[in-house]
Every structure is written in C-alpha cells, then in structure tokens.
Image (cartoon, rainbow, N blue to C red; front, side):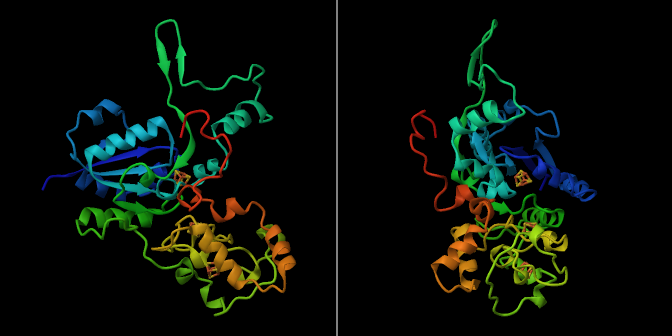
Length: 330
Ligand code: SF4
Ligand code: SF4
Ligand code: SF4
C-alpha cells in the first residue's frame, strides 16, 4: 500500500488545534513517513480547488478542527466529506462545539452589535458591520455568511471519529494517529486517543478523594488557598474530573487548576453539562431550597462552567432567542 493521503482543515478555531499537530515535535516526521498531506491551508499553500480537483474518497483521512460558524466552514467540510474516506473531528470545537459554541448564547445581530459597536476599544462611529456582499469598482465581492448558530462538526456532516481536548495534547494525538494508521479501527463514532474512563481515574490526587464527597459550599480557585496534595473537589472547588473523559494526564490538576471538562463526556452521556450538574447536586449537602439557591448563585457564569465546550451539542444546543430566524439565517 502507498502512503496515506491526509488533510487538515480548520473552521471556527483559535489555531490551538493546528498547533497541537505541530506539538507532535519530531513525531510529526513519522507521520510524514507514512502519509502525504494533500491539504493543510494553515501550513502550506493549498487552495480550495486543489480539493475540488481530487476524486471522491481519494483522501484517506481528513482531520477537521474548529466549530461550524460560517457558510465557508459548511461548504468546506461538505467538500472534504465527499473527498474523504474518514473524517475525524479534531479537538473540542469540532467534537462538541467548543468555546466558539458559547456564541450560541447570542445571535449574529447581538454579536455584531457588541463586537463592532459596544466594545470600549472599538471606534466605529458609522456603526459599520461586515456585509456578505459588497460592490467594488471591479466586481462584487462576497464574504462568508456568519450564521446565528454555531454547530459541532457532526451536526453538519457525518463524522467517523473524534479526538478530544482543547487542544488535544500530543500524546492523545499520537495515540489517535497510531490507531488510525494501524488500520485497526474501533467502531465508528469512537473517541480516539483517550479511553472511556473519568479523569479522576488518572488524577494523582484521586487517592485523597473519599468514596463519598459531601460539600456545603463551592469556592472559586482565587477564594481558597488550595492544598496541592488534596483533591480539589473535596476542597470545595468545582472540578469536573468525575464526569470528564480522562486521557490528558490531569494536565490542569497538575497545575493546581480544576478540570473544566475539555475532553467532554464519557460514552453514552448525551449532555455533558446536565451530567455535571446532576453529579454536583448529588454531592451537595443541603437542607432546603434556600441552601441550593445560595450555593448555585456562587457559580458565576453557570453556562460557561457546565457547557464551556459543549453548548452546541447539549440538549438545548443554543439559547432560545426571540426573532432569531427573522434574518432568514440559521
Ligand atoms: S478545541 Fe481549543 S485549541 Fe482547538 S480550536 Fe477549539 S478552542 Fe482552539
Ligand atoms: S475531582 Fe478533580 S482533583 Fe479530585 S480526583 Fe477528580 S480530577 Fe482529581
Ligand atoms: S484536566 Fe480537564 S480541562 Fe484540563 S486538559 Fe484535562 S480534560 Fe481538559
């Protein structure tokens, strides 16, 4: 068999997932030994027509990171899907909607108003916002449409596998690549590079976590002097390790920060945030409704906490905004 043909593409992404590929360091050379990159516009001079000119299913694997925010993203991932045997959602944004998915708390109108008119560092007296079509002397130029709603990759095209993390750490990427290139593929829809075990299982502080946790209060990291040798959750800090897929090696915990859930849920959990909230409700010791209210009011930005990486893939998908479809967009 000749070399694999692989493609990398980014959608609504911070660039961290592209960086994650480069973070393979010298291991990236092993990838180049067995695979030819046929499309990676971030790193090499490829054009859309290079993909259009390929025959259908001639790319072995397309790794796509970032969420779907623009018409261009949708167009490109549909094109890559038709040209690829396998499509892998790379990183939290493609997997679950990710950080850009928090844009689903708003819509295009609100986001443009805020970004182009209200942000204190913006000077825009005419209130100009991007238009998708603009006439210039030579021609009419077209920019991609900005959708109202951010979607995860599998809400737009069929996805074969997922690589978790924001961004996926090098070991996870390496393991996922090894699985793919070995040809011994797990069932379609599997998460690659990380097992179906909670982060607590690999956390160095797990031994200090009692069988049954019972909390009366939650604290934010700056409100408590944390004991670095003791489970953060038992110290009252919201750590989502018990409901998050492990595989990262407890990177945040080792830096004294709680897990915020970037590896997403374990298999068969439909809604990460709901699972996290139900877990926290189960360890919280309360006497009455006022107690619950008092404690939950301390969770600043609950959507950002429980759905930081997964709002588009939650049961809600987005905040329900009146008139959202008035603009005739998604
Ligand atoms: S998953 Fe994280 S690192 Fe990757 S593109 Fe999204 S925000 Fe960036
Ligand atoms: S709750 Fe957090 S700190 Fe405690 S064992 Fe689990 S991952 Fe580690
Ligand atoms: S500890 Fe949690 S948030 Fe941090 S990298 Fe691991 S899974 Fe992601």
